[in-house]
Length: 339
Image (cartoon, rainbow, N blue to C red; front, side):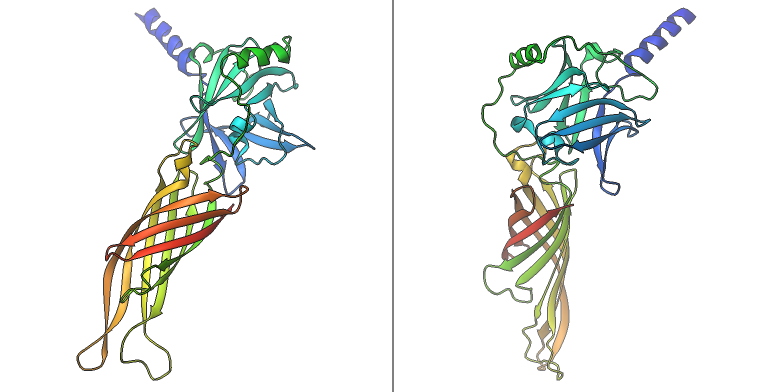
């Protein structure tokens, strides 16, 4: 019985203990791209090194030791968007810590993911954009292999054969998925519509809204998980017969919190379309029968759509349409800056 338990323990340990499955997490405060396992523990990091006409993506373990790198033939990438090249750079060469070729990261447009192959043309794993982040999953055959191209655990080493030519690698990989001949602008939540500080302006297209501001300002933030958080406010002079003697006027106002969510978050066109709703309060002034005024207030709610347009990465332009609980309709525009 003890032997069986020992065998089961080692089987469990070697089946799950050395999995390299992880996801990429961008730390806004430290401006770092971290590698974390699915328990949320940081196991490595990524840094970019810029050259004249290409960028090298360096992967480090928890001890800050280089374990692999990638060369991307671009000079305009950042930590926020280096995974978003997709069809623009569909085939990216992977190197070991000594800059020997050990594999390739290939964009599989048919299923919207990166497939990783070693020099023997064996699939090693996949990167897929899921729930607002890039997730890496090993193929089962290599979950515990010490020849795997990425080992993000400290004090471990690996070796990889690089005696095959890159032309053989390119030929074998291309046989799996046809390489796109043309490139087009892609939409990706991990870059184009994430980490954005936003300011917008909405106007009532009916020209007049009783006891409601006709113009509304909005400030907000798009996070890295397909969410939008905002605050809107507005003010206009109250339509009351009685006005104060100091020359000023009473004001009808609006204060509301807004939450939005992208329709999709997998790198498609609908990543740029957000369904949003607002809840707030509308204090206002109104005339009384004795030619004076009184103060009132109503619950406020609206629902709408916000569409983002990526123009040369930054700034981001938005257009939106809202309708509130009273049937008033608002059109708006805004601008967002990538942080």
